[in-house]
Length: 297
Image (cartoon, rainbow, N blue to C red; front, top):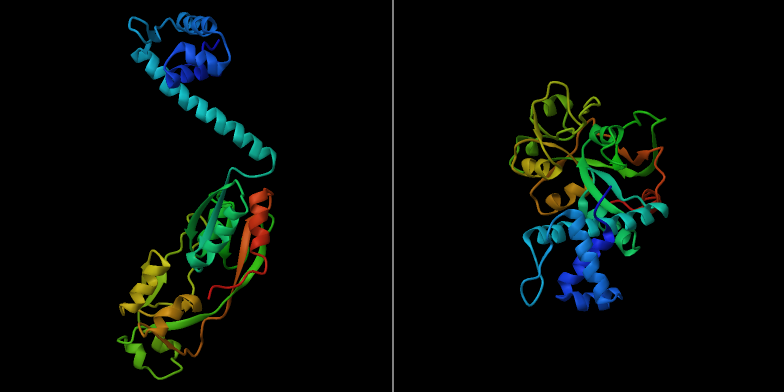
C-alpha cells in the first residue's frame, strides 16, 4: 500500500511556501493541530523525520527536502495528466507529428502554424522534414501522423488517405560560371548527362528510395537538404532542377540562371497524406486548413 498521497504532498508544499504550520493551516482551511498531526502521521508512515523542530522554525530535513522536491514533480505531472485526459476527451491529440516534405519551404508553412496557435488549438506540434519517399516511409512506420507535400503514388491506399495540395513546377538551374550556362538551348539530355547533378538525399528508411530529375549514369552529388542543394548549385558544383519558389530569388539576383532542356522535368502533384485510422481534431484542422491553400510565392 502506498504511504504517500497527493494531499500529503500538497500539504508539505504549502508548509514550505508559507514558512509555518500555522500559516499553512490557514491556507489549507484546517486547524493547526490537524496539520501537525498529519505531518507526524506521514513521518510515522515513512519512518523518516521530515521536519527538524529543534529551532524557532521547523525546517525540512534532507529527507524532507527530497520528498518535497520530488513530490512537487509528482504534483506537476498529476496536473498535466488531468489536462491531457480532458484534452483527449474533447478529441484533441496530445501531439500531432507532421512531416514537411523538403519540396516546400518553411516560410510557406509558418503562417499555417501561426493560425493553429491563434485558434487556441491545444495539441503540441512536432514538425520534421522528409524527402521523396521519406514522407510516405515516415507515415508507414508511424513516425509522423501527417505528411505535407508528399509526392508520387500512394504506397498503400488502404493504409493512407490523401487530398491534393497543389502542383509544383521546376526550372533547371546552374551557376553563371557553370559550363552549361553557355550551352545552346534547348540542352539535349546527352549534354546534360555529361555534367554532375545535385540532388537531395531521399530520407526513406524502409521503402525503396526514389530519385527525380536525374539521368541514368549521371554523376550525382547527394546533399542533405534543399538549402544545401541550392547552395551547391550556386557554388557551381553541379546543376539541377529547383521548384520555382526556391529558384525565384537566386535567379532574380543572378546567382543562378535557368536553362531550357529538351526533355524538361514535368510538373509534379503534391498531396497532404495521413493514416486512414487517424481522426483527431488537430489532424482535421490541418486537413481543412490546407484544402485549396495557395502555393509558395
